[in-house]
Structures are given as C-alpha cells and as structure tokens.
Length: 287
Image 1 (cartoon, helix red, strand yellow):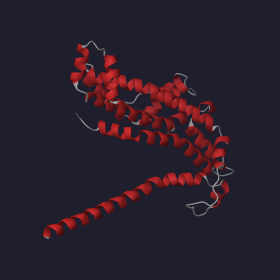
Image 2 (tube, rainbow, N blue to C red):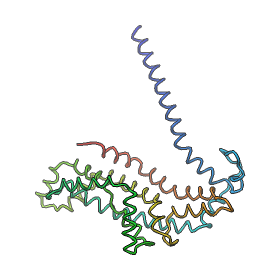
Image 3 (spheres, one colour):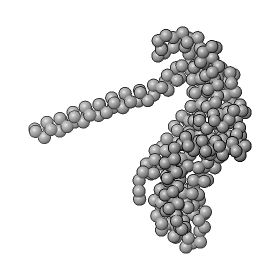
Image 4 (cartoon, rainbow, N blue to C red):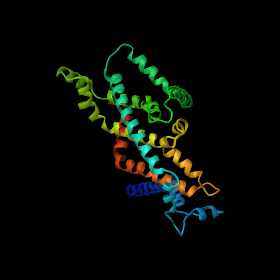
C-alpha cells in the first residue's frame, strides 16, 4: 500500500513538473513568435490605418496586400533580391572552398609550425569587427572596388570560426582511415572528397545555412561599400522603403518587404532543420 501511494505521488509530481515545463515553453514560444506575428500583421495593415492607430491593434478587420505591391513598386526590391542572391551564392561557394581546404590542412596535414599558425589564426577572432570593417573599407577603396560585387564579396570569403568548427569535425575522423587511404595510394584531395566531406556533411550543411543567413542579413558592409542602386542589397531596399512614406515612415510597406525577404530563410531552415541540429550536435562532441 505504501509503495502504491509513493508511486502515485511520484506520478503526480511528474505530471505537475511536465505541466510547468510545457507552460513555460508555451510562454517562451509566444515571446519568440510574437515579433513574427507583429511583422506579418503590420504588413497587411493599410498605410492610413496604421498611422491612425494611437494604441497598437493586435488584429485587423480589413487586411490588404497593397503594402506588398508598394514594396516592389516603390523601390526596385526585385533587383535588390537578385543582387542579394548573387552575393549570397558566390560568397558562400567561395567560402566553403576556402574553409574546407584550410580545415583539412590544419586537421590532417603535418607542416612546420602548424600549431603556432593555428593559434595565431584563432587569435584573429579577438579582433573587434568594427576594426576589421574599417581596414576592409580602406583596402577596398584603395583597390577601387567600391560599388562592385567583388568589393562586396571578398571581405566575406573566409571565417576563422567556421574553419575552427570544421577542423574539429575533421579531427574526429580516425587517423586509421587516412593512413589506410595513403597506403592504397589515395591522394589527399581524393581522401578529402570521398571520405571526410561525406562524413562531415551535416556540419557542412549547417555552415552553409549559417553563412547564407549571414550574407542575406548583411547590413553594415553593403551600406558602407555601395552607393550605386545597381549594387544595392535588400538591406538597402528596406531602408529606402522606410524613407518613402507620405510624409512619414512607410512602416507597413517596410514590414511587407521584410516578410518577403525573410520567407526564403524560413523555408531554408525548415527544410534543413534536422541537418542543422545534427551538425551542431556533432560539432560539440568528441570521438
């Protein structure tokens, strides 16, 4: 009888604990998702009704898609999206080649001073981003690469953090595989392509997605290095839409543009969410 009472009390405590956890998770989900709801809600409010609200309304009875039309007609949002897509794809592709080769060199190749070089390489992460932006701006300006895709892309084609993350993943692959491949006469490039890349595919997909998001959301560098509309990215487009209100900031049209810009990233994450979680988990484990 005592055992049954203890078991029943334990089950009640377990249910109460689970209920509290789910309640806290629900509250946290509302907090996280509310900005997205507010963005979508604002994007379907008319310009007049939005500016007439003295107290923000959490719903609308007369939604409109005019803001989405304005987002594409007020400025060349379609062109900015194309520029951003080109910038993102080229930057990500070049960066993946650079970091894969660098990570392989640090993880598998033996050369004099490798540990010192890698330590100095990691120390670059201590440099403030603002300082890097300033030096990159001076360099790109001196090379006359402002208002060009080359000027936009070059400063973003490598990442110390991604090299470190991928190097740690490569280092988890047993050395015996590498030595066996060398005995069979396999070149380093072939071993990298046939063995290491397939094994670390989840981490590579995670890095690609993170880099795509980083490029897609770039703001400071594109705003600094371009003043020609032919090379504007979506960050420039959002600012331009915001400044095109009829005497006031056109927030609804800006929110509509943000919805359009955010949609590809949301879809990308939903498609590869399992790979992302697998890559992050693998990056934090050894052996």
